[in-house]
Image (cartoon, rainbow, N blue to C red; front, side):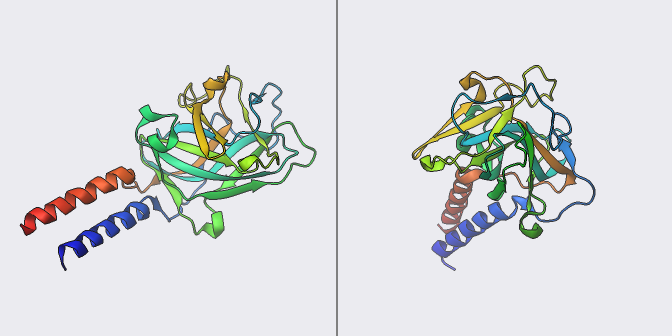
Amino acid sequence: MNAKMRLFSVAWMLLVCSLGVAQTPTPLPGTPLSLTCWDFTYLPQMGAVDVITDWQYLDRACVVLENTTGGAIEISGIEAYFSQTENPLIGQLRIWEVLNEQFLPDLPAAAVQVSDIYALGADPVMGSPSIALVTFDLEGYLGGTVPMPVINPGKKFVVDIINLLDEGGSGLPGMKVTAEISEDDCPGFWVDRTNIFGNQSGSTLTWNFKEDIGDETNFYIGVKYYDNAVPRTPAMGTIGIIIVVLLISCAMICRRK
């Protein structure tokens, strides 16, 4: 095998491995645990919840969480409270691992995606309560054929919900993500500058912390997870993969010479 073929083989293996080891496909037994402020209920009686009205419909709502369990976790589901429930919900969900927190709120610059792109949806709620819980089952997605995302111990990660109903100026409204009142006692990872929104205008996506719209409350987004998961090989991101390929290429060239 000549040097070019070796280089191609190494680059291909690195790319495949970086995607393949990002998740583990084995569901764990037991009942998923919750990484939330409190237990979510289907139709909560929350008269004091603040609904974001500073700007039309959220294009992307994100919350930064942290795995403080001491071991790797497998995310099996997402919970979020929504308002405007007389409207449908059509969107996508992604999980990102934070690599360079200093680059937040620019999510692509600060994190690497460690999950599939999940399609999500919910029909309008009968009776149209002011606030309703919408849950997303990642463990059973497409019959359980999609691996659940793994978050390594001590790592921060981002739950990213994308609203497709307001995309491209369609004018079709969707449900709104609600917010909690700031006086509520929540875990330390629900603090200022851990809640992010994305505002899509044409082809331009602008990232901001939620405080930037004058509202210091947090998005009602929670996580269901299995603990004691098999740790995932740390994600390198595109730049990391390129650097590794270059280093191996240089080593091959030097050895050949």
